Length: 328
Image (cartoon, rainbow, N blue to C red; front, side, top):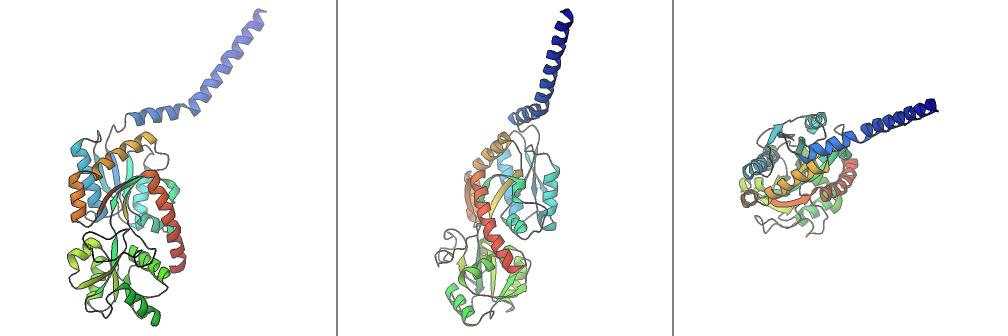
């Protein structure tokens, strides 16, 4: 009987050991991750920007990071890390090398959706956790002031009467390329292309009579467009800085490009870390100084939560894939 009792004890201890091992394997990492997230952040947060310093994405990231640190909305600073090149692939690689713990995130825009639609990188939308949007800015189409057409409808009419008779300055696979193609698809016209990989190139070609139409950020148009005429704005609503320029939707074309400031984390980042960062970002975009900066630079200050932002991105990606099939 004593021997049977000892065997029963051994079996019980063995079973308990197996159960403990299983608990450790399945639950301990989750519990540790949760405990770490609850103390988040305990060290600086790296914010990867896929461009060189000085552009809109970089400037907005730094502006918001500085405001969050100034106000103490996060216990640790947000450190901007520029990783340009490879159509965002370099930045994505840095993001993927980090742990999904909230300490490595990214600030980009819907340009990431263009990269995915064009299959330009080894990543997909499901690789990311959306934190939220801190405002954005919409572009416009412009022609020269001395052009014979003064409105979008006149441009559309000219292109329908003589297909490909007007030249559009674009960079292949860029925002100007996609937005022009989306409008062309909606309105039923076709332009010819001349390569222009920057705002400066588009402006030079347009003013030099080597292009007829080009896309510009609203802020670029306001500061540099004295010899241009804006014929359509691609925002959801008219820009307060350009009250006389109609939106594409007003003119009957379902083409909207708000190009938001999108904050992303790796998939699997804990809720607690995402919520903490999102809370700080929402406060920053509602700060009076940030709002004033946005308005002075023809940007729209608003907050969109991460889940809503991801839903919008999925819908936009569907439209971009349709365009990509047409232009590739």
